[in-house]
Amino acid sequence: MNQGYDLIGDVHGCGLTLIELLKQMGYTQKNGVYQHPKRKVVFIGDIIDRGPNIRLACHIVRDMVDAGHADICMGNHEYNIVTYLTSAPAGLRQPFLRPHTARNNFIVQQTLEQFVNHPQEFNELLSWFTQLPLFLEYDHFRAVHACWDSAMIQQFKETYGGNRLKPEMLPESVDTDSFLYQFLDRILRGTSLRLPDGRSMTAKDGMVRQFFRTKFWEHEPQRYSDVLFQPDPLPEDLQHQLLSEKEKQKLLDYGADEKPLFIGHYWMAGIPKPIVPNIACIDYSAVKYGRLVAYRMDTEQHLHRGKFTWVRVEKNER
Image: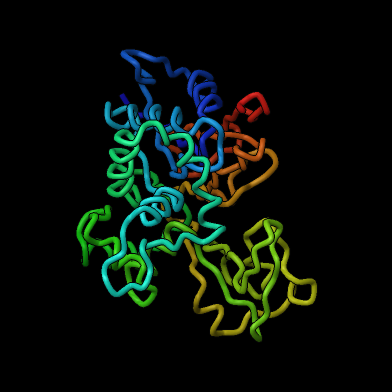
C-alpha cells in the first residue's frame, strides 16, 4: 500500500478550522488523536501565534506527530518564540536571544496569553518546538517552511548532522555573521534582495523594510518584477528595474526537474493552485479569514490544482 500524505499550511492558532479540515479529509479521532487509515499529515510549520485557538491547535498537531500520524517541520514562528524566551548568554547585551521589541511582543502575545494558566505544558511545548525538523525529504517530495536551498541544506547536514537544532545551538543561531543564522533565515523566511541606493518601503503592516522577498524558482529573470514574491508591491519606479548581474547571482533557481516541493509562509490569496508544476505554497492566510489549505499528495511528479482542498476560516473561529 502506498502511503498518502496530506500537507497542511500555516495553522496560526485556527484550531477549530484545523479539526474541520482534518474531518473533511477523512481523519477521525481515535484515542484522542486524529488519524487516517491510509494517509499521514505533514504540517508545514507556524502552528502558533495570532489565532484564537492556539493551544487547541498545538495539542492536535503534537498528539498526531507523537503518535506517528503526522510529521512537521519548524516554522519561523516556532523558532521565534523559542529564541524570544531563551535567556541570552553573558556578553550579548540583551536578556533574551530575540529582543523584546514592541513588534516581537505583539507577535507572541496571543500565544503567551493562551498558555498563561498552563506553564508546565508550555515549557514542554517549547522544548518540543526547539528540536522540530527544519526540513523534510521523502522519496518523492520535499517540505520546508519557506525555501529549499540544496547547497545550504547539505552544508547544514555536514556541519551539524541531521535536520534539527539542538538547544546549545540557539545562541549561535542569532549571530548574524554565522552560517547557522543565514541558513535559518533562508529556510524559515525565504530569499530576498535589498532595495537599491539605500531605499526603503513601508509594507501594509506598517513595517519599514529595505528588502523585498523573491522567488527562488524563476529561470533567467531579468527584472525586479520577475522575482517579486510578496503581497506588498515595490515602489512604482522600481517595479520593472533591471536586475544587476550581482543581484542575479544571489537568486536561487529550484529547477523544474527537482522533486515536488511544499512551502508555507507567504500569505497567498485566491483559489489554491501550484506556483509552478513542482512547487506549491499552502499558506493561504488562514488567520486573516482566508483558507486553511491542504494538498493531498500521492506519487505524482507534477502537482495538480484539483488535489488542493481547504476550509474557509470563518469569524466564528473566534
